[in-house]
Amino acid sequence: MGDNELGTFLRTRRAEVTPAEVGLPPGTRRRTPGLRRAEVAMLAGVSVEYLIRLEQGRDRHPSPQILAALAGPLRLTAAERAHLWRLTRTSDLRCGQFAKDPERTVRPGLRAVLEQLEPAAAMLVNQVGDVLAYTSGLRRLAGPIGMLDGDPPNLNRYVFADPRAREAFPDWAQVADEQVAALKDGPPRPDIAGELTALAGEEFTRRAERVPGLLRPHGLLRLRHPEAGPLRLSYEVMVLPGEQWLRLVVQLPADEASADALRRISPLRLVAG
Image (cartoon, rainbow, N blue to C red; front, side, top):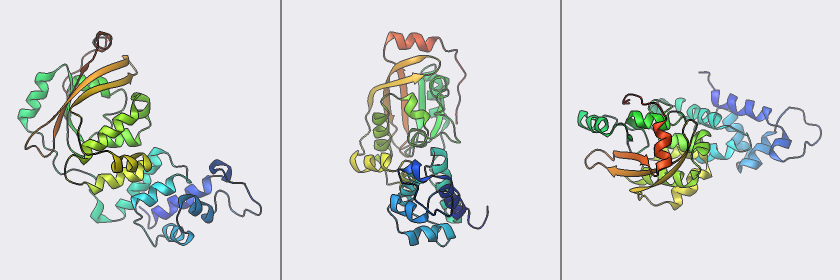
């Protein structure tokens, strides 16, 4: 990585955004393409001096809130927001393992429980949303919508930072609220909270302020599946005592139409992360 990758990225993106894209008049005597520093600073709610420090590499650790504010006027995609966040972390060796839960071990007994749950869709998830192990039934549901991408897959990053999540979940806002509740159901995790603030901005922070840390133990989930079509799933969430805030989530068809649609998908073997 170069000496000032963060500053280079910010300058490059600023030069690629036209005033019209952010609702500004083109103006006159514009010497450089894209937005001026003053325009980005105004739209993001930061000072021009601070933006200069970021672009020049004199400040390499802006807060998640600043990153979220800059992402708007710079017109960053979800992937570019994630890249921006990584640039602020990897420049500091102390943050090399950001937003990763140290407790990822799944004991053999719990893996055996998952095997017995086949062909139901079931997964083991830790507090920060890492999917640690899952059944082939869960793979049939979640694989085609992209939820199991990543190493390990992470529900929070998928829901808040992957555009496919909004297509997959007709009730996306409810799903997002439940993810925040799960994250808050345990000790504070400023690492993953900071990352989600940078990736999703107010979509996450508003919920973090409003949603209590109370997991919903059961409910109904609607899913748009690319192979099975619209599905209605009932789910049960079981928090496992003594397992470092590990929870078992089981999803079952809520009606006969959903059950028939799932039967049309060929079964796969058990997959464990």
